[in-house]
Length: 203
Image (cartoon, rainbow, N blue to C red; front, side, top):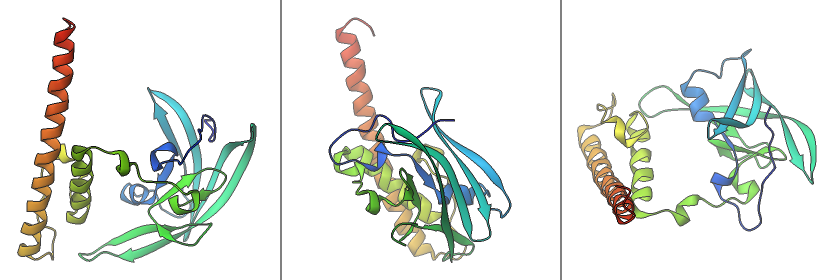
């Protein structure tokens, strides 16, 4: 079983520097069923770098994992409250209630305890992102609002039931604009890499 806490560095950390459990994904994959227990893993270069055990109860999820603190490994067992809210166009949305501060959040970061980014003082990576990274993130935010599959390369979905056509057209137009910016940036980066390889006689 992989553990948490090794390899951390100084300076203000970003959200990408810690592993997070996304309640939206668990909800989407229908894993938040009382009585269900399962493991969750994070991989890097095909290898498991961390793992966690999750056990679902009515309105709660129990976290079990190992965390390294001051060079010593310790077992962590903590419970997070599950909260659901109705979606505008039907269905429900799941949230964590942060065990440390009580905020309603989608992500809990795994360290000494499962906690939100505010409690860990994490900055968003977007402060360092490129224009096309930002466009991709904004397009995915709109895709979530439209109920479309995540990922700008997955194509457009259809109008959500109950959404006004004017709203749908406005959101989809914004989405397409962000996608165009993202793809242009990706293409420029790829062409730059090809040019560098060509200069070295590798392309």
